[in-house]
Amino acid sequence: MTMYKNMSRNIVIGPPGTGKTTYLKNKVDAIIKEGRARPNQIGYFSFTVKAAEEIRNRVAGENMSENELKKMYPYFCTLHSLAYKCLRLEAHEIMDELDYEELSDKTGRKFVNKMKKGNGIDISMPTAQSQYQDTINLAYAKYPNDEDRLQKIFREVKLSDYGARNTIMQMDKDLSNFKRDRHKLEYVDYFNSFLEAKNPPMLKYLFIDEAQDLSAHQWMVVDMIQYIAQPVETYIAGDDDQAIFRWAGADIEHFIKMAKSELNYVFPLTQSYRVPKSVHSLATKMAQSISNRIDKQYDPRDDEGERKVLNFRPLNKELETGEWLILCRTHEIVKQVCESLDRYGWLYKCYGKSVVNEKIIEAIVSWTRLQKGHEVSGARVDTIYSFMDSTRIKRGHGTFKGSHTEMYTIDNLIANFGLREYIKEDLFTKTLDWYDVLNAKGIRKRIRYLRSVMRDGHKLDDKPRIEVSTIHASKGGERDNVMLLTDLSYGPYKSSRDTQQGRDDELRVFYVGATRAKKKLLIVHTTEAQFEFEPIFFHERQAS
Image 1 (cartoon, one colour):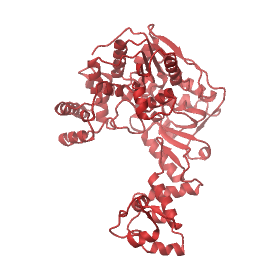
Image 2 (cartoon, helix red, strand yellow):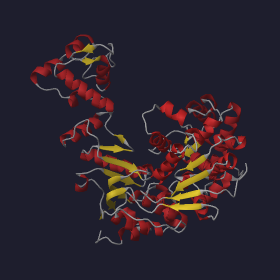
Image 3 (cartoon, rainbow, N blue to C red):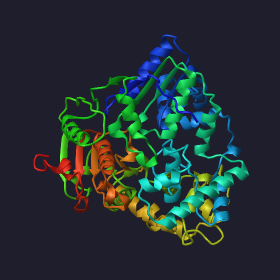
Image 4 (cartoon, rainbow, N blue to C red):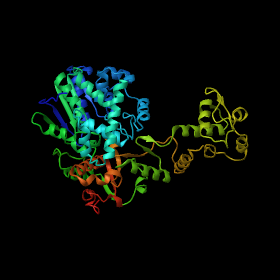
């Protein structure tokens, strides 16, 4: 593979909320409107699948089906999707769940599907949720052409355990042999084959968004596309201060070097439409503490906003009103926060999804209708039965045996489908509420939670106003009120301050977290959070 150099680019530097994507979108709109290129002659590559879909919808600006959008804007996607498309790959050529299971059985080591979306992060780099596999992924992302890639990664992550080293090297060998024998491809293979083919689409304009998160491997793809397609203009947008995916192979230094190169033209965006003054002052201190960065200035919104520091975990009067985004450094802390929200009966989302199971809600609504003497469909009866145990339905009737399309009453269910007779009797003597009926093992905790939610005045169809997420999963988002937990007491995060690079990376993570706030930033300090950046967060404790 060849490294391509000396190519001029337009570099758009956009701090939080300054509208990087909007800037690129306006460029695309102008190109199409002025007839300089058709949509299929424009390459717009985003870091995440979600971001690619959003920009495609924004540019189209009309109601079109997903298939129509993909056909009209074929190169509005991730770089991974581009390689897959250009190579004309088919599903049977790709490693799938069964392949990894077979490989695991054959080797006695656990392999998982690396392309699964997990932990709320939809990124265009693979994450296996497996430490050994993630190490292999990182090695290929950073050193795709280097035969000594694993040894380099071992040194970088300070992996001194020779047993773990040997296991990782053997897993890499086993995986390579399996793919060769089965004629299968993985994520890294898409890029390698794409680079070797040297046959990218002939684009007139090239756009790269969130460029600070691209790996060395992805930069090679971008370089090859630009060198061969020779677009009229190339726009690269990003912000090195928001580069938080180094653990997945992001080459932050490449973006910084590119922005400082005399070959390129830099367009700084200087007005934030999100960040208020109080948050901006803190964020600026954090950014300026990063050792290796692009120096930049940007202005906050005119609003002062609010910044406070608390010395205890959340779930207090601060959450009683307004929409909140609770941001945690680790998945472990997300789990703890969710458990507390459960106990207190707060209705919330986690990683963008409501914790209230839609099927349970369907069962509750359907039972209430039956209780009032109304009919419900067999499909809904089936849902009710799935949340009942043997105290409510007779043996042999664990699943509903009727038709999903027909309508049923309680009398029908008692007479023909195993519903116990005393339920009907109870209707005449007392109200047999849904929480007395839906009692199957595994959902009782959820039922207790729903009861507490409803006691607090929430309706089942209410939209949760509280969301819990890791900082990484919140990238690109914003909320009026943000609660930022600074705890670094779990796993490898305790040692993140041991190197300058580690300190810089953690500063970037908390910088991203803080700058999600549009009005109010609440920083939650715990006793475990005595870490390197405390002076930045807490130096104005009284004033904050």
